Amino acid sequence: MSENPMRKIEIDKVTLNFGAGEAGEKLDRGVKILEKISSEKVVITKNHKRTPFGGAKGRSIGAKAIIRGEKAKELLRLLFQANENKVKKSSFDNSGNFSFGIAEYINIPGIKYDPDIGIVGFDVCVTLRRPGFRIKRRVIKRKKIGTKHRITKEEAMEFMKKEFKLEVA
Image 1 (cartoon, one colour):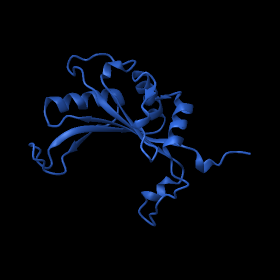
Image 2: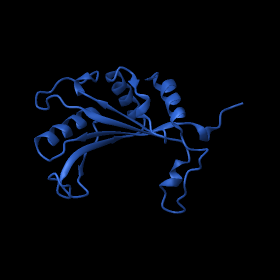
Image 3: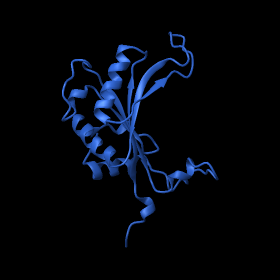
Image 4: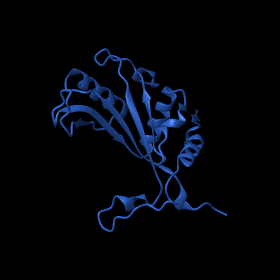
């Protein structure tokens, strides 16, 4: 008996996030490192609300890059090596997605230290999906994903162990 192709889990996207807190030199360094690692277009994220500790609405506070497809898988392999192929169990959410941090970008194999950037880290967020997940984002006849078709925390951990030989601690 063959497995149902609609139950197959795959990587939807990998998002690299860098939070600077303010515009300026720190944000520029974050943009440089995300461009260097992802070789994708980096988007500057802005403040949505005014915050009492000095953040005006619309002020640049961070950067992100989104990688999809085979390039995302190859990048994930490198990022896991930088993290010693380990991810905490608490990093997984109930929808099967997970996040982890890279403390220093120089830990990534093949990336050399750049004195212009210095030592910075960033967050990696991985979004998983199954075929048919488009129904929650489409414009016409948008629907919720059924409970049996959702990806559970346990299924996501098993997928990552099998696909990337990842150790979930």
